Amino acid sequence: MRVLRLAGRRLAASLPTLLLILVGVFLLLQFAPGDTVDALMAQIGGGDAAFAEEMRRFYGLDAGIAAQLWNYLTRLATLDLGFSAIYGKPVATVILERLPPTILLMASSLSFAFFFGLVLGVVAARRVNRWPDTLISTLGLVFYATPSFWFGLMAIVLFSVYLQWLPAGGFSDITMGYTGIAAVLDVARHLVLPTLTLGLIFLAIYLRIMRASMLEVLSLDFVRTARAKGLSETRVVARHVLRNAMLPMVTLIGLQAGTMLGGSVVVESVFALPGLGRLAYESVVQRDLNTLLGIVFVSAILVITINFLVDILYARLDPRISTES
Amino acid sequence: MRAFKAYLRSPAALIGTAILLAVLVMGVGAQWFYPGDPLGLAGRPLQWPGASPRFPLGTDPSGRDIAAQLFHGARISLLIGFVATSIAVVIGIAIGAVAGFYGGATDTMLMRVTEAFQTLPNFLLLLVLVAVFGSTIETVTIAIGLVSWPPVARLTRAEFLSLRTRDFVQACRVQGLGDAHLILREVLPNALPPVIVYASVVMAVAILLESALAFLQLSDPNVPSWGNLIGLGRNVLRTEWYVSAIPGVAILLTILGVSLVGQGLNDALNPRIASGR
Image (cartoon, rainbow over all chains, first blue to last red):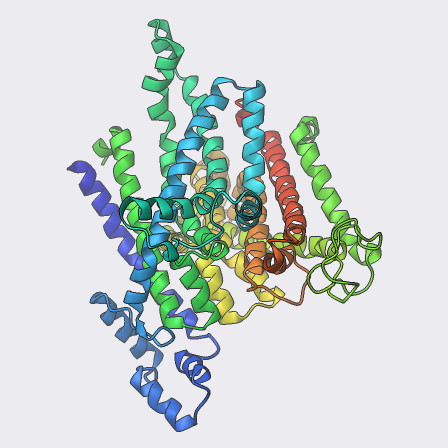
């Protein structure tokens, strides 16, 4: 209960941040050359100035900036993100359609990076300065330096073009008409390469942090006590060291939630996944500023939610958190 | 001097320095190695590397020399990385120093802004900035600097918070020295080493951000950027994958060089942490 209250307080504190982001990006977008009406007019093949005026009035774009901002924020309170002129649908609908692939991609990449980062970090720390450590640390450095989109393209060349093991893109194979478990497996097959691509850099970061934090915890007094009790090395690591050494990694998940979401813009574009990131890219190219602002809002909410979950997880791992103030 | 010697003893730092120097020579000497416009037509398009002695790394789908683009791209990547990092570090230090030194309401307000920047995915903000201000090489560089400062501000603030109550600062305060003197001459020099080390991370991220933007064809199409070339190669990926593969290796090596130099600096400047590795 205490944990929830603490995390809840952090959540409440992020509301001003959210407001700041919205107001900031809204004002920023006012500098954009051309508005939604311009984009629409271009799409329908032009029109006269009177028609444009009428459309501006229809979309509420003729009011002053302050009034527009106020309108936007009050509508936002009812979860109305406005209308996307390009897609011809409410922005909220467009975004909701695109959210599942992104959340799935982020969850699978995070699990992949966290699990293997943990395992590799532990192995490297237990063989510190010997060949497994050198190998893992070098791999970590190379993974960190690999541009994700490039890795994705090379993975497509190897696994889709030459070996033909995995699909090169898309979220599912609609021509096969899979249902039930076959459909799930189909989506999973499509997500293997994107997951590896997005997760690679985080794997590199996690394994480095895990190794350093393992080394630090291994040198603490309570570990010596555990060893002195005659516990086996495996048991010392599993029961005593791991939980403590994981704390910095858990913090990092929250800190990098935004980076991961940003990375999915590129990865979704490489693998043609119909996700939020691709939508962001498309709305920049098509100058669909309403949708872009909606994506900013939803992304910020997503990052705040992840941080909320991380807070709870952290407090569960480290009981001292909930007793502090 | 001690730090410099420690730096030279680390093999990782030496390898990193060598890679970076090589990229630097490529970039600075690009005009000399490959005079003329690297984006101009050079020969038959899509020649494989080694197929023609004139083009050791082949040509791209528009018949431009890949090697020439690689050399000129080195200059662009380093330039963007360096300038964007400088912008990010200057903004980050300014905000972090003021927040950490004064504390209280100033600190709360500045940290709120920093938090807002960190909550918004930086690549998304970069997209917004490019959508608003266009994608010339200058705006892209400034935009990358503008989205990269928050971690620097946090780090600087943390250093300032722990340094501002130290005795030597208090002593200067008692002597009646002004805040500007205290911040710039007393606290900042002591807070700088971890920030300089972190600048290598900022630079690596800046180069990656630009290449990702260029890959999506949202950066300046009129400069020979490595990311641009990878994006162009994407259309012929199934058969002529070398067009994308070659510039990717260049990015990888450059980031690796920057990271290794950063690690070497870290080990040299923070010997306490270095002993743990």
